[in-house]
Structure formats: structure tokens, C-alpha cells
Length: 153
Image 1: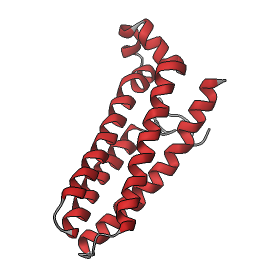
Image 2: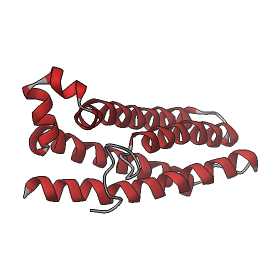
Image 3: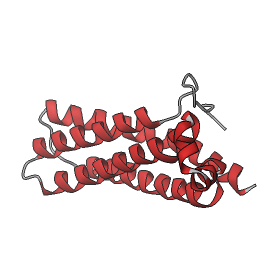
Image 4: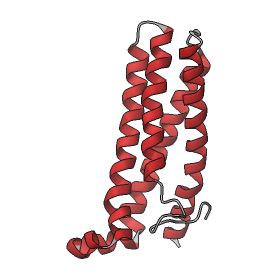
């Protein structure tokens, strides 16, 4: 029961974060190219994206450590798990990519806050949140992949 609920939360939260990420990156690109001032909405959008990522990471860690049968299999027989595409993806590849995505978003937010001018803030946000978004998209188990999962649970 805990597995299904946690997995559903993790699945639905993904869509909120992806939408926030696309909006934040699009707004940052617009601010960068349009040489617009950095406003409170830019700051808040980035904060919501990073906070959502942090929450998603927390839910993912709970799933990984306490509920997932795939990580149970990996901890019981790591060698066999690494030979299985599905187990390896969820135990290692997905996990590493998502931690990298969270780190990129955090680095981008810190660097944007420290940037001297508004254009630099927008550029830094666009680059780092954009990279974070790309890594996330690469790490999602899309249904067309051999280890894919449904778009909605």
C-alpha cells in the first residue's frame, strides 16, 4: 500500500515540476534575450521549481529506501541487478540523473542570486535550470522505453 501511494505521488509530482521547469526556463530565456529586469516573479518561479525538485527528491528517496521492490532486488543481489535493464535503471541511472538535476538547479539558483546584473541572472537561470530540465527529461522512464512506466499512475 505504501509503495503504490508513494509511487503515485512521485509520478504526479513529476508533471508539476516539469511544467514549473519549462515555465521557469522559458521566462529566463525571455528575460535574457529581451534584456529584462529581474523581478520577484523570476525569483519565486525559480524557488518553486527548486523546492518542487527537493520535495520530489525526498519522495524518491523514501521510495528508494523503504518501498521499491526494485531497489530491494538491487541490495540483495547487486551483480544480478546491474545485468537487468529495469533494475539498473531505477536503482542507479534514474537516481543519479535526478540527483544531478537537483544539483544543477540549486547551483543555478545560487549563481543567479549572486549575479551582478539582471541579464546575467536570467542567463544563469536559463542555462542551469535548462540543463536540470534536460537531465530530468533524460532520466524519466518514458512509456516507449524498455523500462518505461505509464505517464500517469
